[in-house]
Length: 346
Image 1 (tube, rainbow, N blue to C red):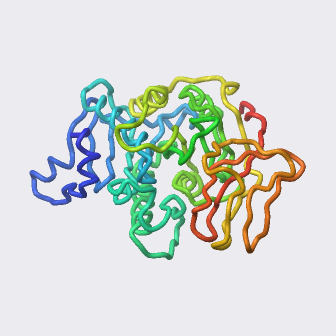
Image 2: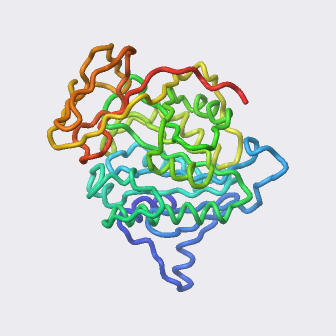
Image 3: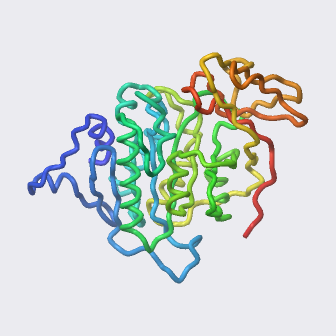
């Protein structure tokens, strides 16, 4: 049944009826617990035994975990990766030991095989959102689902991994984006990410209203956007390099300590500047296939905007991440980053 959940969600036919047969479809037993279908693209895993121990430091408690995939519809590797984890759970190869909310994000865009339908869903996770449209409605529904999940498990620490793939190649194919918020990141999170073979970390410098930022900003969760390679169609993904990330997902679902790795295995960067497209007459001054984290020396012109003018690298080299000249007006066209030191142990 879990293996069919993704397909049923995309077909938009998850039952919401109230008859006994419908209720059986929406709640079924698993090894160590059960799952509930809360709606299209919303799956809650619930262990039989309580998992919270409030006497322990939050770093050592079993977290209530949100795992989101498919926020951009053409990013299929995380969907396939999560499908493998759910198949292991259903087969009894994993024992459920933690509350987990699995979210399949932009259903219409996944069906269409596009990044989004009307607008970028991963810029809409802000309370009081006042725009209309299918993606805005989906953002409001997903925010409500996260709010309700964390409220149901209020005695547990909160964690959110939002799994993505990048539009283009990267010098670091697997990297994490740490959202900007007051909540400090626990040192063990860096160790978990290193153990999952994450190669780099990018510290955001301001609020960005992404899905992982939502959980960190509004709920104080440990939260990251995880980029897991390059966006490819279903069936064309190479999942072998993501096996350590799959093992991390397995550990979270079982409520056990994930494998740890040394922080020296990861490179750390901080955002220095955002390139914003301010008008139609905008271009990036480098090749369209430039990989993420490519470095440009001082004096290099990186962008030209008829309103904002040229952007030229200053006294220190900068690397470019997430370049995309075809974003909407007033949207981010690239992040410019520089290397920084790794976090110190608490």
